[in-house]
Image (cartoon, rainbow, N blue to C red; front, side, top):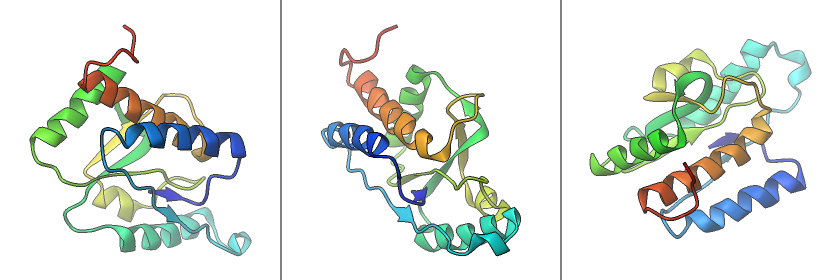
Length: 152
């Protein structure tokens, strides 16, 4: 789930490339939360709260929610693959990864989350994180399947 649409064509192209590859491994769906209109009159906290309302409406009670958050757990690619494999083995049926808006998440989203995952200690735009994440998701499934995409 992502707040806003992916704007740049080169990012869309890269995301689509990995989404097509991922369909060989899992059922994957991208849900976009519409960007808020007239945000100049809103504080950052108000904007995050409104985004949170839209996110929460899309979640089901049984969803296992993982926030892509700079303060989340940091895993290597093999560790991330193991994390996903464990979720599959424990019959976690619906993993929902959420990329927030430009200001991050409201406290209500942190309270709803089951886990937080950081892709790096560096800061990336919320647009670029989308591409980085789908590539890492694809990489994880190739690791799980023992395919030669990932090199140690």
